Amino acid sequence: MQTAENPEILQDETPAASSETLTEPFSTESVSESELESELESETEPESTVPVLEIDPDRPMIALTYDDGPAVDFSERILDTLEKYQAHATFFLVGDNITEDTEKILKREVALGCEIGNHTLSHKNLEKLSLEDAVLQLSECDDKIYQCTGIKASLVRPPYGAYNDAIREADKRMFIYWSLNTNDWKREDPDEICDIVMEYIDDGDIILMHDIHEQSAKASQKLIPALIEKGYQLVTVSELIHYRNLQTEDGMVLFNVHPDGAFFNSLYGTVCDYELQKEIISYDEEEHHPAQAETESESGLLTQSTEQE
Ligand SMILES: [Zn+2]
Image 1: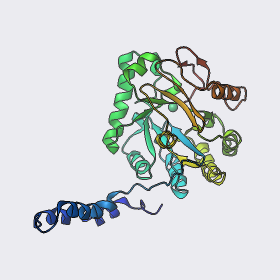
Image 2: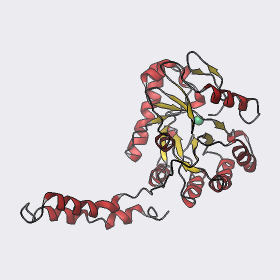
Image 3: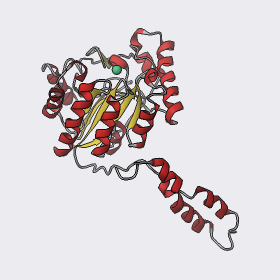
Image 4: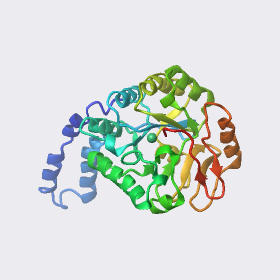
């Protein structure tokens, strides 16, 4: 991480004030508009403090996702590791966990080029709420994220993976599931969490973890360099979608973006690659991948998997 050590210093170096003073004395007679624009552009360039992760679309890539934070210490340790290896991840945040103590964590996630997603205001099972309350859970989490970062989250991960078609009709953002569930929250051994991922990982997977547990932070310290060593680029969910040229649509529920086809459910009927579905369901037979893709195939409604997504 060479550019984001101290974003404020970089911004201070930007001669914003001088560019204002430049525009007045010059008329179009002495400097053409295009010349002036390019001069101003080059002056404002250093404002971009988000590190650029050079992503090769032809190389394997995966999206690490962390739910339920931000959490003091554990989220920060994960960010330390991501920063050390110049890797990206996506954090699905619980609005109530955004406090005076954790705001800096959010800002750091953004500064490191990580993605922020919505995981509701208070980690409610949206299916068990009235539609009005479910929408409120999402919008109030949006507000907390926006107040802290100025960002409107474009992705949602519903707690417990629970939603219904009415919720998807009401909030047409993409709902992000996962194709590899580490069940990190109930495993005490960080090595075990790491081993599960390294055994089952596939190009284009979305990995489910949580940044509120010590074992998850410890596992990440080992897992992130191991994945990079194995040739994976660690990208955000949106980067995975972008670099795999996935055609998105309103109300899509996404599981992975494998190079030869994504696995997703559409609001307008289930649309997915059944070979991939078979592959994911076969994971379910393993203890490590419990029921992550049980589908009611016609409605696209997904049944619940584990207690703490
Ligand atoms: Zn959760």
